[in-house]
Image 1 (cartoon, rainbow, N blue to C red):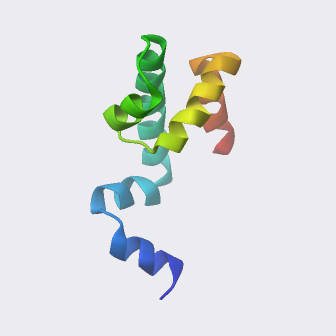
Image 2: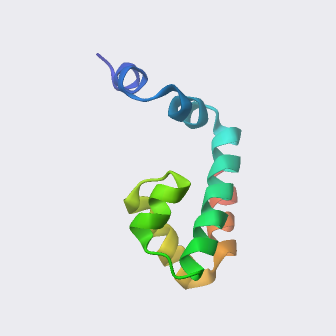
Length: 83
């Protein structure tokens, strides 16, 4: 079984749809990052924010670091550079 087949078999359909459609994933990710940034700035804990926006806890550590380094704009610049 290939990696792609495993992903399709074990990943919920909603995640697959956003993962495999590049532009949609970027838009969704940007919205999640902005919402996460707002919650973090409001003093919420990373694990709580990750659960609220539906991303992995490890992603929150990356986003928090980017927020500390350059704000929400740094996260958006990083996403647009990937395109």
